[in-house]
Length: 176
Image 1: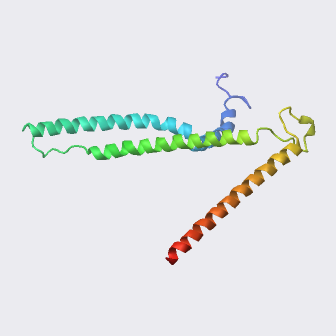
Image 2: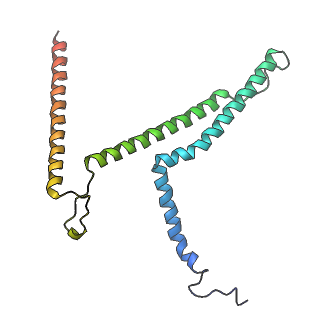
């Protein structure tokens, strides 16, 4: 009986205290995984396999049923599963997988572009002693930002010119 008694702060009292934090961590992890396209893709693959098996099974049953009807063995009174519904489910899963892959590709592209256009960190004023060798000076950072602003202005001006040309063509064609 002495071995079954729990001591204060022992292993039996700790799980009760850690349970709310572990539930919160699991909820946060599941929320992160819902937004992670790669994880969602991995979760959809078994569903896709099952859906494909279902499509093939229904197709074979319908083919066997139609063959029996054509050979005069059965009448068409027996109900069969609808092939189009199972095929639609399969295509819906394929579409979801395609969206997951496109989203993952876009995330990767943005990450690469971000690393390309701002590869180095700027040291903060609150921690000047932790300057990393990979970080850029503030003057370099300002130069990069100014070049990005000028590029954005150039794009804005080009879009304005294009919209004026389109608007001008629309007015001249509307007169004729």
